[in-house]
Image (cartoon, rainbow, N blue to C red; front, side, top):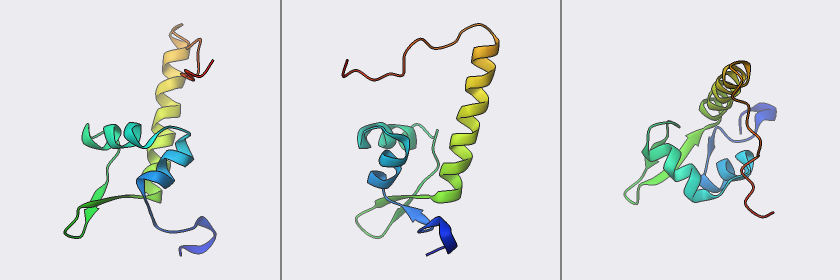
Length: 82
């Protein structure tokens, strides 16, 4: 454990839950290099460091702010359920 922050490394499932997306989306972010991650052990289990995830989220907020300021605001949250 890492203080009140929880574990240092997160599974793909944990990251997906944090971002409210599916695990395939997280795997895509990793394989495209958008979200840095490491592979552990002979089975190559993916793990994302909590601080890396927080940095990714902050970067996404900054990019979204620029996008909105340029007049290209999103009109959907990407939820395909409705």
